[in-house]
Length: 200
Image (tube, rainbow, N blue to C red; front, side):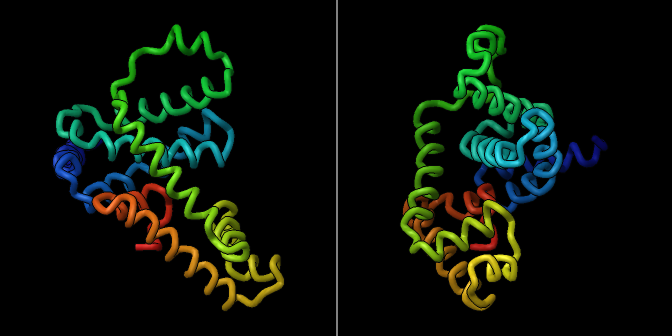
């Protein structure tokens, strides 16, 4: 990377370490596309790549106190993502013993209380989605999980585009409220990580 960018990035990392959400958003925007394609090349799955991408940035945020000491953030971030892919493989028992024996220690070990927090975020999001009325839930999932356009959803569900927008707005409000209630200090940054920044 260009030296001036490295200087700016180091300043950015110090701000993120202090809990600056705008700085984290800048870091997220700078790396999300490259990191997504890196993960996709490893997994060959859009769904898995998106999940690992979200997990990686969530881990970075939860471990932000350490960022001001990171010398090479690019390598640091991609190693966290690679570890996330390997962890996913171990969960599926694919080459579990080989990965366990040969993997080097991660530079970002999630301590137990952070790991619990991480699981709670994912669980809160899923619980909020599950509490949505059937129509809202279907609209939200078609929009978020499949990336469908408003008119496509309207055609698929045989409803008007206006009705789709109303369902989507109501669903987003419920999910945002659930995250605000459970994570009052982190809810805004969690929406960005989870790809729900339109709820801000």
